[in-house]
Each structure stands twice: as structure tokens, then as C-alpha cells.
Amino acid sequence: VADAGFVFAYTRAMAVNPEAHEAFMALIRAIVPSIGVRVYEAATLGAARAIGSPHCLLAHGRKSLRADVLSEDGLAAFARGDDSGFTPAEQAVIRYAEALSTDPRAMTDADTQRLRDAGYDDRQIVDITLAAAARNYFSRSLLALAVPTDDVPGLDPATAAALRADAA
Image (cartoon, rainbow, N blue to C red):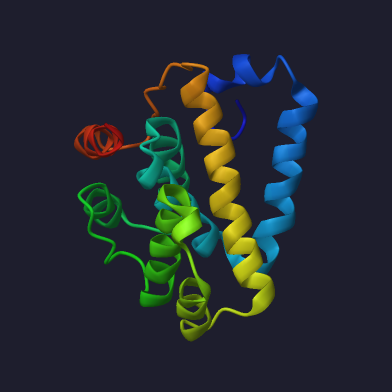
């Protein structure tokens, strides 16, 4: 409540096994320091868009606005499939997260090489991979449990609608 201003619907589902949710949060806390919030959100949003997770697109869209990762225009563009609000290196992260989220068995060394070419080191590549994989775990859990999608405050209604449509 203190951070978001409301209680997300996923809280009820995760309250059934709070230790698992805390382990997920500990993983996120271990990932973010090496890649930073901007890259973490790029990986998260890329994975959420590929999965079609309205929960995570809305929640992390809001987080991206609050952390100045994206402007309102940049988030609206992202919802339309335009990643120009991100740097070229962050766009490489989005593509990587999308590949991991849609067909990870098709990934090759060329996928990680693109991240390397964008300036990421081995630790960062592992943490980008973990960020996208963690988003798959959480997003797919919410989808499988049929957790209702929240109306997330702080998002322009048109942008929120576009993010929901992006998840459809």
C-alpha cells in the first residue's frame, strides 16, 4: 500500500505461499544492482509484452513512469510496439527478453552476442536473462491462477487501454 497506493490483486494469490513470493522478491533484489532499474524494466516490459501479461505491463508501465525510465509518451509508444523511448542497448534487452519469452530453445550464442555488442558484460547478461525469466515465472503464474487485472492508478487511460490491448 505504501509504495503503490493500493493493494494489487496478486497479493491474495501470493499470500497463500508468502515464502515463495519473498524468494521471488529476493531474486529481483539480487538482479537489479548489476543492471540498474532502466535495464531491469526493459527486460521486464519486453518479457511481459511477449507473454501477453496485462498485470505486469500495467504494473511495470507505472513503475517505469515513476522511476523516469519512460515518459508517458514513451510508455504509450511502447504499448503500440514502438521501443524508441528506450536506448538502443535497452532495445537489445527488450528483443532478448521477447525471444526468451516466446521461444527460448531457438536462442543461440548470437542472442547473447547482441547483448555483448550493446555493451553488457557476462554478469549483466546473466542478470538480464534472470530478469526476463523471473518475469515469465511471475506473469505466467498470475495468468494461470486467473488473477484479476488491476486498474492501476497513475496511468493515462488511453495508455492503460493500449497496454491491456497489447496483452490480448
